[in-house]
Image 1 (cartoon, rainbow, N blue to C red):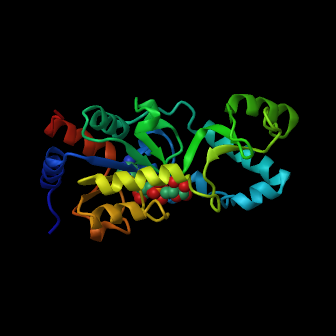
Image 2 (tube, rainbow, N blue to C red):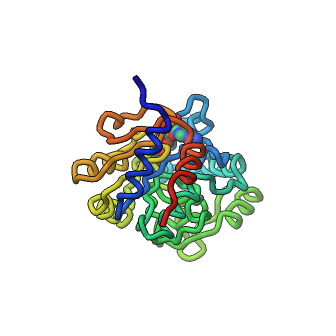
Length: 256
Ligand code: APR
């Protein structure tokens, strides 16, 4: 017999109240209600093309042109996206002092838009709202790159060293950001509540963190529309829409 939603929400409210150090761990599912498509819901626009591996991006100017074309097309798809209930819920948890930071796999910058400082968002897969030079690391804004891309047909080189510019996201085959991974592991090992919101938990090493938290004694909660690979390990699984679930929790449970 499946537990009633009410009893699941009461259990989550209790875990939130009892927690002293909680961690939010988010995937694309927290942003779909903001209009940003996720990756593995059938028909996802992200999956219309095979992802471009990092090696291929480095090897060919033609592949880089295709990568930038796809990037700008996806940016247009969710231009103007604003933080949703889930982002705002986590921002409230962080500002209440119960959550030191949010670990995210997302690149959309919506956690920062919800009011979290850069230190309060640990981005495991980088950030797609700006670009960096692969040689010297100089940050470049997308508008400048896009206007040159559209007039010249190619992205410009780094204004500082002439190197290759890439969206500041982590592509398949590209090294994970070591600082972000270290911070995420430290936080995972220091929390008593690990709250997964909107991830299929199939991409590693990110998807290893919920199990690490659980093995380290934290309560593991998964809120997701579909079943995930780690549901069997979780202390609490709430299947459904993040927005309505967290709206209900916010009514039930006052953060103090
Ligand atoms: N409420 C609850 N769950 C939702 C909602 C919603 N409103 N919208 C989508 N979901 C669920 C989907 O059912 C899915 O299980 O969120 C999950 C999102 O899973 P993915 O699309 O696989 O996204 P994610 O887990 O973040 O992917 C991880 O894969 O392609 C790489 O780098 C990419 O960071 C990404 C990584």
